[in-house]
Each structure stands twice: as C-alpha cells, then as structure tokens.
Length: 198
Image 1 (spheres, rainbow, N blue to C red):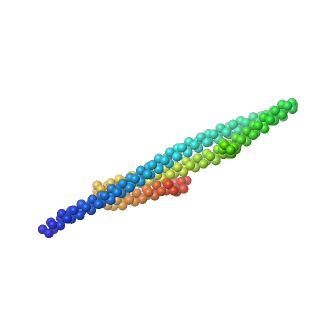
Image 2 (cartoon, rainbow, N blue to C red):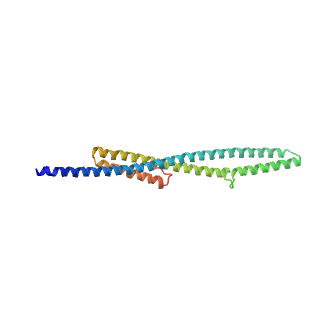
Image 3 (tube, rainbow, N blue to C red):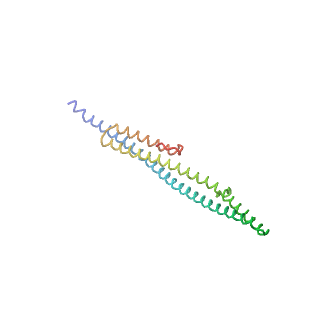
C-alpha cells in the first residue's frame, strides 16, 4: 500500500522532469532555428555580392578589351601615318602628319593609363582584379554559410527527434552540430575568405 502511495508522486516527478526536458529541447530548437535564419540571411547576402562582383569584373574586363582595341587601332594608324610621312616631300603635309601622329600617340598613352578617371587599361586591370577578389571572397563566405545552414538544419531534426524518441544522446549530437554550424557562420563572418575549408 505504501508503494501505491508513492506512485502518483513519482509519476508527477517524471511528468515534471519530462516537461522540463521538452522545454530544454524546445529552447535548443528555437536557438538553432534563429542561427539557421541568420546563416541563411548571411548566405543570401554573400550570394548576391558574388553575383554583383562577378558582373562588375566582367564589365571591367569588357571595358579593358574595348580600350585595348581602340589603343591598337590608334597605334596602327600612327605607324601607317609615319610610313606615309617618310614618302611625302611636302613640308606642310609632313607637319600635319606629324601633328596627327603626336595626337594619336598621346591618345594611345591615355588609353594605357588614365589615373584621373581610372579608366586606362592599367587602372581597369587593377579594378577588375579587385572585383574578382571581392567575388571570390563572397563566394567563400557563401560556401561557409551553406555548410552552417546544413549543420543547423540537421541539428534541428535531431533535436526534434529527441522529443519523439526520448533518446537524450540525440540532443548531444544536435548541440554538437549547432556548435559546428555556429563555427562555420563565424568563419564566414571573420576568417580570411580566399581559403576554402573544403
């Protein structure tokens, strides 16, 4: 009879412990879901930056190629004019040709380097390479956030399984994956981005 008297008390303690355990798991799931939302948002931002920087680099390389073509055309014209000038006897014509040659060579030099506008070939190469670096860094960040998101998603599934199965070990695995996800999120935020971990 004494044993029966303790049974309701033990059941209440078990229910209370089970309720507290479920609250802990629910809190873990909530934290994991928050971290997942953050890593997904950061991943989308990195993906957008990757696309934007890729377009910028592509445009700059196209601009560079256009400048190269124009520079080549102007230099060829100057060389042809020089050849014609050597066969011309008229001093006025030679003077006019020399003036054109000088202008074309100045134009070619401007196509090669134009620090004021940063639109010379030399400056365009530097700008295009900088845009490519931004693209590569953003792509690396996006990769880290994708790994983080996957870890958070699996962690949420494992934590949810604890409530259904009551297997406490899954909560440890879930927490461990949450830590991995957090680590990759922090790597995406703060690590040098030129290096991929995988």
